[in-house]
Amino acid sequence: MSHQQGRVLGLGGVFFKTADPAGLRAWYKQWLGLPMDEYGACLPVASLPADAYSVVSPFSDSTDYFAPSQQPFMINLVVDDVQACLARLAGSGAQILPETENGEFGHFGWFIDPAGNKIELWQPPVATGA
Image (spheres, rainbow, N blue to C red):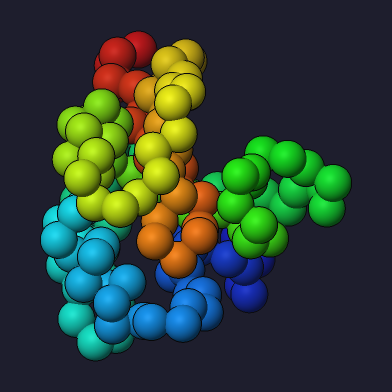
């Protein structure tokens, strides 16, 4: 079977506006260990867990899933330990959202960054080898 040319292969980045890009880059570097430089953070696909993937998903404009953020988007970051990341963020100035979720798709937690963006942390489930 041949594959068609001109198709999307993966997520290449997340780009968004903020009043203080340098300050927000420094915050993400300090509190989540993102390897930030003046362009942002490059995260090699090879560093992701075997069962991780990128999702592109339009939501209805009436969704409240991004609340309490007022932004029309939410960023999902793959992490190795949701609870450790949320604990690390406790003194960062971020608003840690109290609910977490653990289910068949893995472990999720959320926070609002200093720029008002809702960030979803995703710890993929451990591969079962099945």
